[in-house]
Image (cartoon, rainbow over all chains, first blue to last red; front, side, top):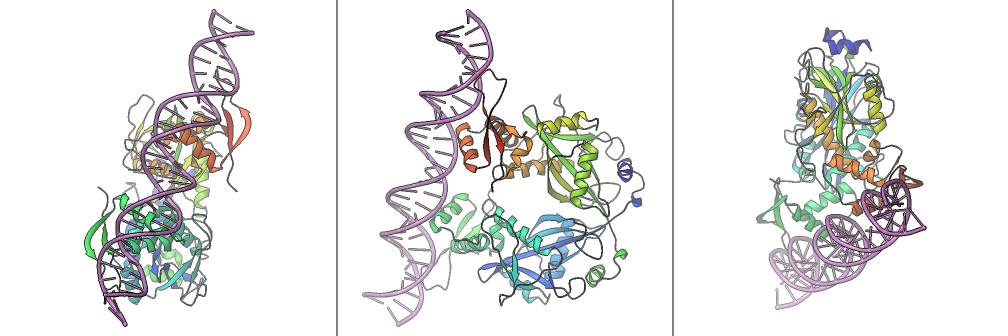
Length: 242
Length: 242
DNA sequence: TTAGTAAGATGCAGATTGGATATAAGGCGT
DNA sequence: ACGCCTTATATCCAATCTGCATCTTACTAA
């Protein structure tokens, strides 16, 4: 390929065809005990009336992570979230207007951040995710409004959402992602609730507790949960293993 | 951001800044019982004399996967390999000439494909990978020539290589990637050798054999290894679980 | 005081794993 | 033909891990 040889030889780089690069954010949090994503209703064509992941174009002098952080800030009003790259979608017909390659990022929001984004006047709406497959089988997921009605998704965003769930499930029990959805102090039951919501399956309580404590990621704060009418649970804090 | 509003509103897309997108391939195989990558020595500036992953620019009308397959064909002369997207590198100063965002792909080559690529006059050279960390701790890796001398890597390709090893280790025992490095028929010992090379650690033989057979991915062919001066091993074939 | 609830602890059976050891099946030298 | 060497394959056992049931603890409400 001619352009390839030129590329390696360092000829005028401005001669090449360039394309448009975007980032799309899968903002995930918990809503009512189940996994939920924050979506925007599209006002304009194409896909007007459908629901889309918040996204934006990557500037020519902007690192990818910076673009993702910018979208997080501008579209969701957030500065704090676990952000990790998910996958890059580069099919030809993703967008009917033009070729757009999109780098999808997974953004995990704590309960507080999730509520903030919803209340911030950004237009974001929480859609609970209906995952009709068990474990890491994979397959399509459905986003549903509060009423339970499915929300039609724009572009290939259903595929991106499905991959986000798959990635989250896969990383859940060997990485720290589960803590990103929790406040700084949390009980073991809350942690288990997060895991169960993500996995879509109930977990065994003593086994879960044992495994988590044996990981060495939790440090007891000595504080107790307040406001319960029963035995208050110990509050833990996530501590990155050294 | 102005361009963002225009993007959503569907204004003239040609008005936006575009950037150059490339794919880079981490061609991995086994050489002399250890993990090895295929690299090209750069002839031109920048980084002349350093070693680089084979790559190429993504055409404006070319899907990402097609670009990766094209590089595999044109740069390595191969049509058969396990190809999977690895990560997208989008820092500003990856290439001193211009902003280039690169989607890295992991390509896993069977022993035959690896030898073919080396013999095909493509200029590719096998570099064994020296991974100085255990498990999935992560960290830099060193590419070494046959003599053992470290090969200086171009651009951010050392980082890409390191991520490839990390990904491979992580996926090894729950996915099928291990089979991509083997011929169609293989013995359990060969499979174990592959795993040990990738993990950089010895494995327990009976346990490994049990686990692999229990997975249900292996079907015995009834054929035996030939040419040994001892008991010949059963040849297995990988069969995707249905 | 007592009932109710959920946290946290304990005990146990079955499954999984690491590691040693025994047996099987080839070629090879005598 | 016969034993020997080497590696494949099978077995065994102990230690660990997991799922699950049950027990105990600590709090509120009545």
